Length: 495
Ligand code: SIN
Image 1 (cartoon, rainbow, N blue to C red):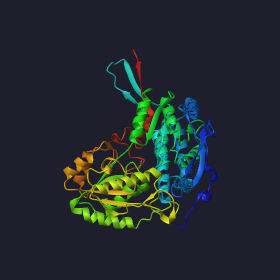
Image 2: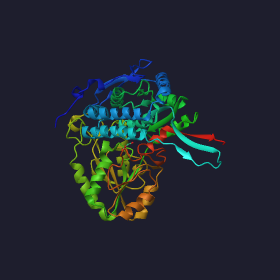
Image 3: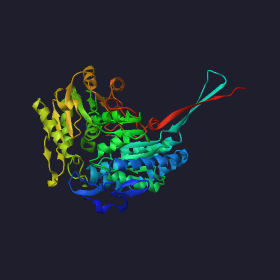
Image 4: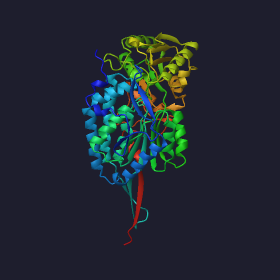
C-alpha cells in the first residue's frame, strides 16, 4: 500500500504554522515556539507559536470587538457561512485527513471519517441557526404580554482535545457561530495543524474578521486556560478533555460564573449478553475499542461478557484483531496507528501489568511494539481475559487498544457493576432482545447508549455525560442552546 506525506498536500496553504487572530496569521508575543511531532515516526512536522496569556488577551479582544457586529448578522447569513465552510471541508477532505494523520497518528481512513464527521456539525448547525425560536407566554395579568427571545452569549472559548482535533472544534464552534457568538479556539498542542487548516477554510467561507481566533500552545496551556477562564469578556467556555482539568476549569470560571459545557472522561461499559449476535457484537467491539487506537472518550473500556457467550466472543474477537495491521497511519493498509503520547504507552503497559498481576490472562499482545522499525508510540492490540473487578482498568479508562474482558452471569449483576462508576458518558449493549435493550438502556447511569453498534455519535444526536463525565450537550437539537441565553420581555398594554 502506498504511503503519503506532507508533500502530497494539494492545498499547501492549509498547512499553517502560526496562530490566527483577527484575520491575521501571527507569532506569539514572546517569540517562543514549540514543535509538533508525528507520533508514528517522531519526526518534527511543524514549529508553532507558543502563545500565552498576552496572546490570549489579544484573541479575546478581537472576538469581543467582532461580537458587536456579528451578533447582529441574520441567522440566514450565518447559516450560509456555515454551509460554505462545510462544502470547503468536503472539497479538501484528503488534505484535512493527511494533516490529522500526521499530527495525531490515526489511520488515513479514520482521519477522513473524522473530517466528514467534523463537517457534518457545520451542516447541522447551519440548519439549527434558523430554528432558534423564542416563545409567547400566557400571562396571569391580562394587561401583560410576555415573550422570550434567545440571544447569543458573547465570546465563546472552545478548548478541544488531540483525539479528534477538528471534529471537537466544529462540534463546539459550529454551534457557537450559528448562535451568533464569536469564538476563540484552543486546539491541543499535539494537534493544532488540522485546526489551523480548518480556520483557513472558515476564513475562505467568509466569516467576518475576529469571529474566529486560534491560540496555539503546548507548554503554556495552563496559562492560556486560566486567562480564558478569568476573562470577563469570555461568556462561555466549552471543554473536551479529562475530568481532572474539567474540575480545575470549573473552579477558575467560578470567579465570573461563566457558562460551561464539559465533556469529560468516560469509562464505557460494553455489555455482551448471551442473546447477542456474535458477528454484530464482535464487529461493534472492534469499532468501539480500536477507533483512534482506543483513544476516544466513549471507547469501550470495561467489556462485560455473559458466561454463555464469553469463550466464543473472546475467540472470535482475537481472530479478527489478528487481521488488523498496526503501523504508520499514512500507510493505507494500516488499521491501528500509534498512541499520541509517550506517556500513553507507559500508562497502557502499567494497566496491562496490573491486570496480569491480579490474575487476568493475556490472550493477545500485551507489549509495546515497533512496526516497520518505527520509533513511535505503538503498543500491540491486547486482549485481557478474566479481568478482576479490582484492577485499575475497572476504574480508569485505558485510552489504548486494550480489550479488557470481564465475565458476568446476570443482567442485575452487570447493571450494578456497570453503574458502580464515578463517570457516565458512553455505553454499549449487545443483545437481540428489544425488551432487554430498552430495560438496560434506561437503567444505565450514562449520557449515551449504543445498541448493537460500535460508534454512537452523530451530529444530530446530543453528545454528553452524567456524573463526573461533565454537563451540557453538544450536537443535536440541544447543542446550540449551550451558546444562547433566554431573555424575557414583559409589556404592559393597559387599554
Ligand atoms: C470523544 O472522544 O470525545 C468524541 C468521540 C465522538 O464524538 O465520537
